[in-house]
Length: 74
Image (cartoon, rainbow, N blue to C red; front, side):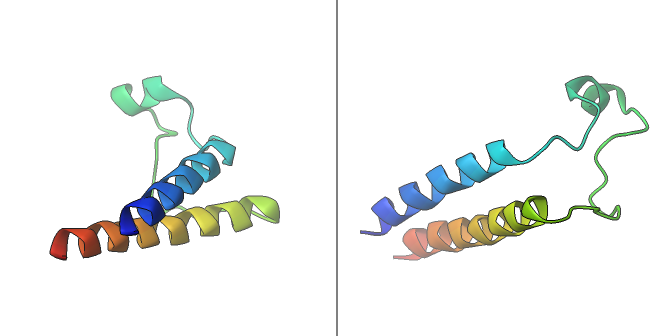
């Protein structure tokens, strides 16, 4: 039962991740350390549907993490 729930959450997490708009300059900036690289503490200026998708992705990520830990304990 928990495995089916984990797979469902994982599929939803993948879909929501793909729906988000890109926030970086590309994969090359991740390797070269470009000035526009990812900064987790930067001010996020998402509004409307982008904010809803970002929040839903974060919630599903936490749920996925907790489910995996729960399955590992059981």
